[in-house]
Length: 156
Image 1 (tube, rainbow, N blue to C red):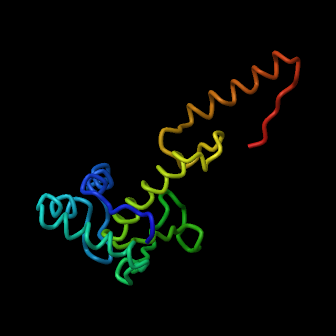
Image 2: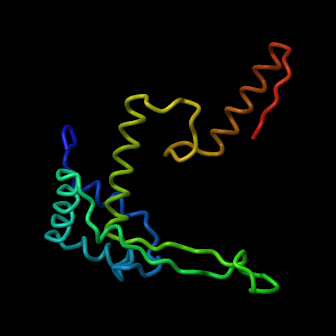
């Protein structure tokens, strides 16, 4: 892909370091703790980077990364389990594919923010933006309205 820098070792490490080791087994039978162990080997980390970079260069997402398993989990504290509404389907994806998706997501988010492609009031789904930020913006908007003798309302 044109103008896409190769993923670095640090990007791969950053993508996995915050992942919960207690994840469920996925179609590839790996957990985050398995992958964290694997990347301790320098040769393995560079092989993973080669695969991630090849996927980007070729513009091809391997079928193996698209494989998923659906698990149906009953919702807790229900009086009866005779209705589909009391169950929650969960899709488990391939862990290596999830790792690469995290790396891509981090890179795309960095570039969209760095290039001002995201409106300043966009808060959801972005790093360094929180409910505290949303509350501060809302409070500021309300108080700015009061200074101008306006009534402020919100629709959420």
